[in-house]
Figure 1 (cartoon, one colour):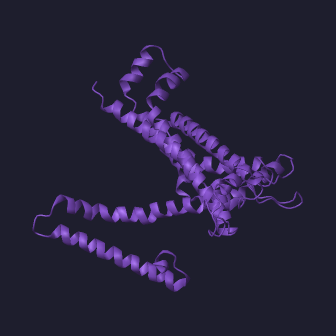
Figure 2 (cartoon, one colour):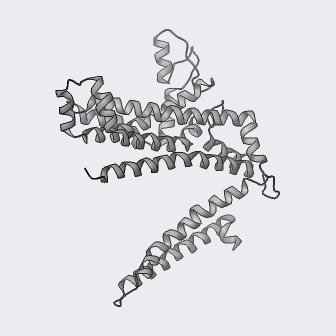
Figure 3 (spheres, helix red, strand yellow):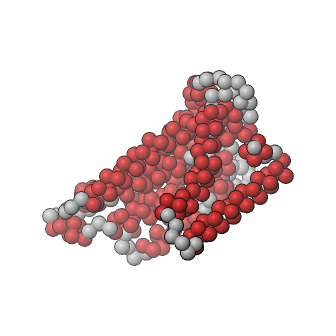
Length: 331
C-alpha cells in the first residue's frame, strides 16, 4: 500500500490517478445501480450509498492528512525520531518565528476590521444612489482577481527605480511628481507588512460591501420610518438602527475575512516570498516543510494555524445559531 499512499515518480502518480478514477467510476456506478433498481431499497442502503463516497473522501482527503500532520509535528525533520514539543517550542521562541506570529496577528486584526469598515461605509454611501450599480461593480471587481494576480498588480504599483531612472511604479511616480524621493515600499519592515495588507483589504472590501449592502436593504422600512418620525437621522440612524440591524451580517463578514486572512499565502509569496520580515504562518510552514526540508517544524506551524482558525469558526457557528433562534422565535 506504500505505492498508493506515497507514490514516487511520474509512473507511480499516474497509477494512483488511474486507481482514483476507476474507484470513482465504480462507486458512482454502484450508486446508480442501486437507485434504479425496481425493487424497494432500504433507506439505510440509499443513505450509505450517497453519503459513503463523501465520508471516504473526507477521511482520505481531510482526516488522514490532518492526523498525519499532527503526528509529524512531534518528530524531527526527517520523521525518524520523536522530539516531543521541541518543534512547538522552536515555533514560539525563535526570533524569526516570533516575527511570523506577530505578522499573522497584525494581518488577522487589521484586514477584517478595515475591510469590513470600508465595505460598510461604501455600502451606506452608495445605497440607492444614482450610480449605485456602477460604484458597487467597481469595488467588487478585485474579488474576481486571483490573489496571485492581485499580488503581481500591486507589486508593479510598488515597483522601485533609482531617482535617476524613469519610475514604472505608480506610487513612486506620484512621489517623484511631488518632488520626493522614490521609496522601496516592500523592503522596510514593519511598514512593508502593511503595504501587503493593503492588497488584501483591496480584495476583501468588495466582499464586505456586497454582503452588508444586501443586509442594509433587508432592514424593514417600518423600522427606518419610525426612527425618522422620532427625529433620528444621519449618524444616529447609522449607529442605533443600521448597525444593530445588520449585526449578524457583520459577524459573518468579520469571521469569514478573518479565516481567509489566517490562510493568506499567495500575496506574501508573490510579492516578497516571505523575505524582509513579511512572512506569515501559512507561508512559513510551506517554506519550512517544502523548501527547507524541515518536515516536523512545518507540520507544527500547520497545526498552529489550524488551532488559530478553530476559535473563529466556533464563534461564527455560535453566532449563526443564535441568529437562527432569534428569527425562528415566535413574535
